[in-house]
Image (cartoon, helix red, strand yellow):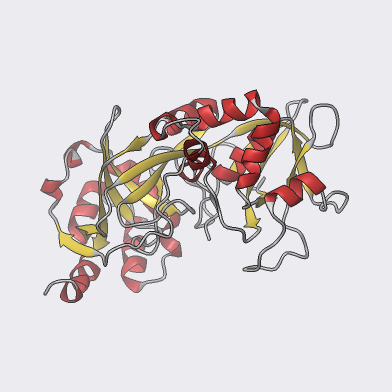
Length: 344
């Protein structure tokens, strides 16, 4: 399980549970990657070195050690990596996620009535725990010292759980950072899909902001809508992360705005360089590093792009629902080792 719950899940963009075809592997050349020669390869190399030390395979370990000697970045990738297109029969889908910055309080009072909980002591990993409705309606966790902070808006709390991390700003200007601490073992249900199924919106109309507005405009029905999703995320404080760094991803390292993506580790190992070609209104051709995962990120051609912290990052991330292609960069020997099992 990842340390992030990604925005696509709220909008019904997950293919979790779908029967995916066996993956295919196609070797490519760097000349096949549009705008490869004009990308900032040094920026990608810097992000790569942030997490490559956690990759255990000897092939990766050797490349990581050399990467940290500050080689020419473009030559490094072109000399030691092979672009590989991995597909499973599903079309490419790019979405975006971000780190929200929310108003909160260290104590309950006034408008601050919605707690951010840490993982309860009686929670057992892998076993179903209390549902979202049970936690929020009955408040069985109240008074157990599990409250990290309090938020003014229940919708903010819900979307904090969708994103998996955030910054909480207190009235006096102080604040904390929180990151994924665990979940209740209940299946995730998309509230965006629920609104579509009810006929409230068509699928192309659904976005994070549309959901926010509907819940706020319909307080009682909105509360019931949120409870449709029985899954509930718990948090932990991550104040050791410097303010100028991104939140912790699934590798327990800070992720980087515009250079980190979340992928399905069943197809792409965490820490791997990935070339993305995102279509849509704002095309992106860029070398990214796969440093995160998420419940909605399933499939070989599926990625969530990290857009940064705050409201503008949230607006930018919320607009992304695009096709395109992503090509994994693998150490040359590992790339060729895949081929005998995939070519008839």
